[in-house]
Image 1 (cartoon, one colour):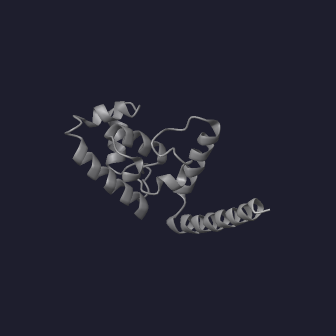
Image 2 (cartoon, one colour):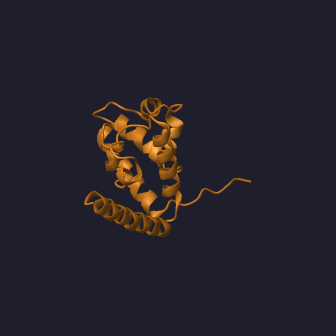
Image 3 (cartoon, one colour):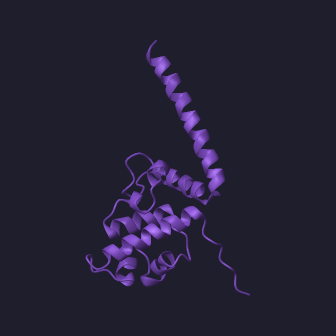
Length: 142
């Protein structure tokens, strides 16, 4: 029995559309094939690359970081909200420290949430961030 793959969310489909557009614009100037791009991403060649390009596997943060490097674009061109999900300044590199690896793992989990739950989480985080900033500002005035 073959396991049916799940449908991409609207957000995942948007990332895929952006990735495909960039791929189509960049593959000739960069002289890339799916095979070359897959190897450059550190995968076992064309198969993994093809699964992302075909939408069989949803793009995740790690894949976006690798693809962006190979395609010579900022990761946010593929996944516009990536900078909100990564530690500051890490939008174009892979995690180097344990703390950054944990942040990437958390970001991956957040991306797996349904769109509505992710919006709720972003609102809660934003409110919490604002509250913490206000308290820090108050402490700095003392």
